[in-house]
Amino acid sequence: MALPYHERTHHCGELRGTDVGKTVLLVGWVQTYRDHGGMVFIDLRDRGGVTQLFFNPDTDPLAHGVARSLRSEYVIAVRGEVVSRGAMVNPKMPTGEIEIAVHEIDLLNKSETPPFPIENDIDTNEDLRLKHRVLDIRRPVVRDALVLRHKITKSIRDYFADNGFIEIETPILNKSTPEGARDYLVPSRLHHGSFYALPQSPQIFKQLLMIAGMDRYFQIARCFRDEDLRADRQPEFTQVDVEMAFVQPENVMQHVERCIAAAAKVAMGIDVPLPLPRISYAESMAKYGKDAPDMRYNMTIKDVSEVVRKIDFRVFAEPLAKGGVVRCIVVPGGGEMTRKETDGLTEEIKGIGAGGLPLVKVVEEGGKIVPQTGIAKFLSDGEVFAEICAATGAKPGDLIMFAADNEANVCKYLGWLRQEVAIRRGMIPENDWKFCWVVDFPCFGWDEDAKAIYPMHHPFTSPKDEDLGYMKLGTDETPPAADLLKMRAKAYDVVLNGIELGGGSIRIHRGDVQRKIFQLLGLSDEEAKEKFDFLLEALKFGAPPHGGIALGLDRIVMLFGKFGSIRDVIAFPKNARASCPLSLAPGHVADSQLEELGLRVVKSK
Ligand code: ASP
Image 1 (cartoon, rainbow, N blue to C red):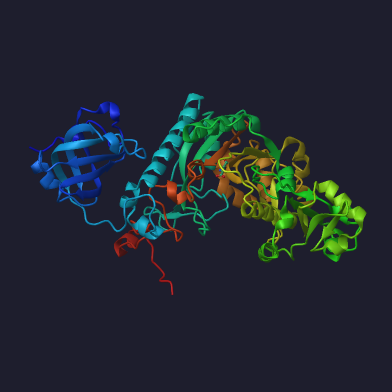
Image 2 (cartoon, protein in one colour):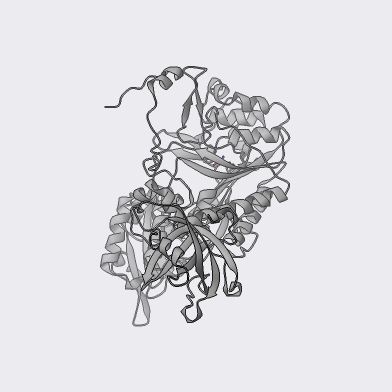
C-alpha cells in the first residue's frame, strides 16, 4: 500500500537521540546513495535538513530492492524506526546521532541526473546555477539564504506593525517618478502611445499617503530601475519603504535603527548598541573620504594642507594655489610594504584619476624621526616633517600616503586608498558590525559636465530650516550655484561597514518651497506641472510635515548573511545582462500582441 506522504511525522532535520525507538514517516529527495556490501545507505533531504536512512536486505528485502534503484534527486517517502548510530555518530550533522531503519518505501518520482551536485561547495558557474535555479535552491546555502530573508523580512514587518505603522500597497503601474534612473515602461493597450512606468520607488505615493492623513506607513516594496547593471545591481529589488508625518529626522532614525537592531538580532544573534553614532556628511567626507564610512578600522584621513604649504614641492603647491587641499593617511607599520605593493597602489590610484601616489616612510635614525624614500627629499626640513608626524600621529615604521588636488578628488582618492590598504593589509576585523548614521547631506551636488546642480537625494528633500535663506524664496531669482551648494538637507543615510543600507529625508511640505526647488533644478513650471502636478496639487490641501526612508532589503540580507552578492539572496535573480537565465525573460512577443498595443519593433542592427 502506498505510504501517506501527506502524513509525514517529521522533517529531515528534526530527529535526535531522544527520538530513538519512534516509528517515523519522512519524505524528501535522495541526496546520496551508498551501497555497503548489501546494506544501502541514503541521505534523505528536505527543506529542514538531512537524515540518514538504511535498508537491510535481510530484514526488509522489499524496501531494500526499491532502495537499490534510487538515484540522486529521486523523491521518496519512507517509514521506519529511529535507531541510534552508536559509535558511528556524525557530530557534523544535527541528526548525526540517529538513522532510520527503513521498513517501507515509496518511490514518488524519478529525476534526471542533475547538471551539478546538490551540495554547498560546488565549482559551477553562476549562469548554469541560475538556469537550473530549481536545483540550485535545493542546495543548503541557497535554501538558508531564502529562509534568512524570510526571517529578516518578518522581523522588519513585525517591528513596524508593532509600532503603529500600517502596510499599504502603492501602484506598480505608474507615471514615472524621477529617482534618477531609467524607467521600465509598460505600453498601454487602451491608450496607444502612452506608457506606464514601473516604480523606481513609491516615493510620491508615500508622500501622498501622509498628506491623506495615513500617518506611519510602511511597505516591503518592489522597485524597478533600468540601469546598466554595474557589479551588484538588480533591475528589480526590494525596499523597506517607510514614511511618517509630523516628524523630525530623529524620529525616523530612531525607529529605523531599532528595526535594524531587531533584524540583526534575529539574523545574527548580535546586540547592536543604540543609538547608532551620528556623523555629519562633512565629517564623513573629511575623515573617510566617503559618505558611507567604514568605521571598522581607523586610519582616518588627515589634512596637512597648512603644514605642507611651507615646503617647495610642486605636486602639493600647485593644487594648494588653486584652492585645493593636501591630505593623507598613515598606514600603521606600512614601512614594511614592498615597492611592488606601493607601485601597484600607485598604478591603481592613477586609474581612478590621481596624478600619482606621493608617499614617505617614517623612520628613526640616531634618535631622530626622519623621512625616507618617496618624497623624502622634499620633506628634509626636519621641522615640517615633525609637524606632519605630530598632526597625523605617524610613528616610526609607518607609511604616509598623500593626495593633493581639489577637495572632491582628494576625498575620492583617499577614500579609495584607505579601503584598499585596509583590505590588502588585513586591517578589517571579521565579524565586526559598525553601523552609523550620516546626516546633514548637502541638498545639491554639482554636475561638472552639465554645469548644473542636481539633487543629492531627490527633489522632494527638505533643506534644513537654517539654510532656506540661500534659496531666495518668494522671488524668481536664481541664487549663485555656490550658495545653493552650501545648503544642507534634512537627509540621512544608514550605513553598515562602509555600505549604505538605506537613506531618506524629511520632505518638502510647502508648495512654494517645492516649486522653487523644481525651478532651481531647471524644471520649467510647465515641466513641473506635467510631471508632478498630482504632488503639487496635494501640497495645496494641508500637507503635514513628513519624512521617511527606504532601506535596501536585498543588501541587508546579503550583509547580515555574509553572502557575496545580492543575487545570492533573491530566489530568482536576473544576471548581469538583466536577463533571467531560467525563464529567459525578457522575450519576444507575438506580432498580434504588438498590434494590440499599437507598437512596431525597430530591429536593431
Ligand atoms: N525614495 C527614496 C529612495 O528610493 C528613499 C526615501 O527618500 O524614502 O532612495
